[in-house]
Length: 167
Image (cartoon, rainbow, N blue to C red; front, side, top):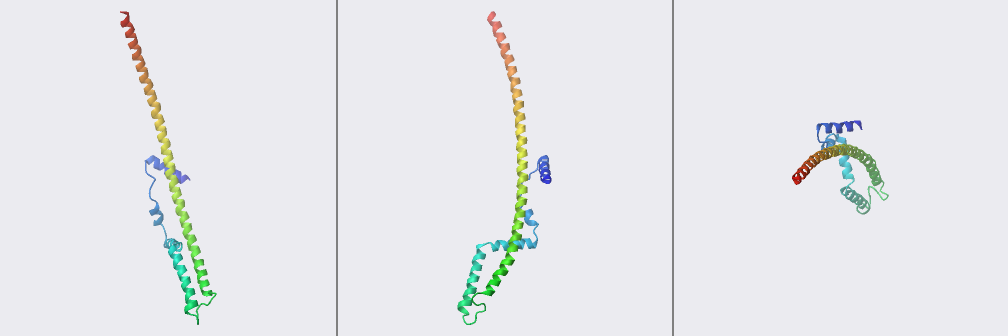
């Protein structure tokens, strides 16, 4: 937290802005493997993948049951299809986990950035509140001074009126 606090204090001292789009910075540092993992996970979690894969399975079963009835290349318990599904799952799971880890890292960076902005905003609001309190105190002092001057004028006027009434 020390680095975060230092960044916020520097931003306050320099009157700089902390709110910026950090997406470009996060995406800019990705390796080729990370980009591929994100794209594969995005596709693997889409309806396009589900529909395509479901169609592939139906096509596989249909070809082996109805078209190749005499000599199917993968007969009924579909062992080859099970092997393909197992291989796909064993490859897809780590790729999705890599993508989730990256997403978690991005979320952590966004949360840290949001924390910095919120902390700076909180400190600036506190400073504004202190300034307003200071202005109110000074304004009250000025009002009291004006009131004293007005009271003095009124007393002088009352003295003049009493003096005029005697004559």
